[in-house]
Length: 284
Image 1: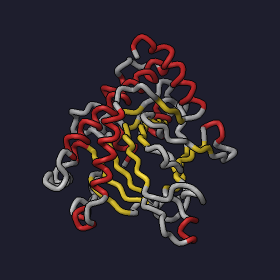
Image 2: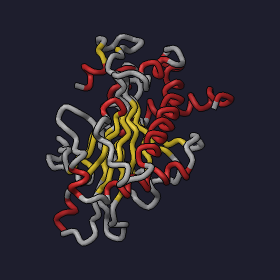
Image 3: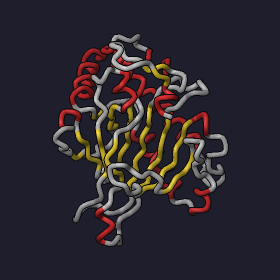
Image 4: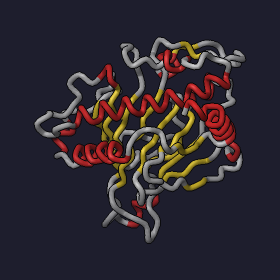
């Protein structure tokens, strides 16, 4: 990375300012580590409903389990999924019993940290182009801070096997943009459905399929970083469609890492296009 920093920065900047979506490979997270995280997610969602309900996300917290809870303004219907969110400062009492899921906490904490490291490398390239100090975003996303807001999320889109025909008219996840700085998304080959509306196509509402590639991380810019860059980096609409005839109908898993600035960080672009605002006020 350090010997190719300029080349990588050019490629990331072009992708992020034109499309808002890109995929990275050779990022340092091994296939075994990714597979282990997906295995833990699969076991978690297979737990009985009452055990997951004991970890249910509360209105005052971003941590824990939720079921068909997100209703997108773009659809007016709940996304057909369940999820489990891991924001480090809020996880007290929100981990499953270790006897029920050995290794769960250890594996996912390591995976969260590995994703944070990749995100910091990518953001350091953007910092160079925006005229910030190279470690600017790292200082705004310190993991030791009580205001740390980065979140690892396990997502389970329910199986559509034996579903009724009318169920396929809904969305696994309706169209939306992310409100964070940068999203790193892990997908499994054969479990497609992600579509993006690239930044340069936003006015034409043209949607593009994103094929899962083993080991690759699919990344997108979020609203927070778009504002921080004075709108040069593009936050992009994306959605997850239902499977089509002839496609895999079983359950679909994904693991996004939402990288967002600590609550106390002040978001102010180098050109001053928008007034300064703390990350806490921006999100809440």
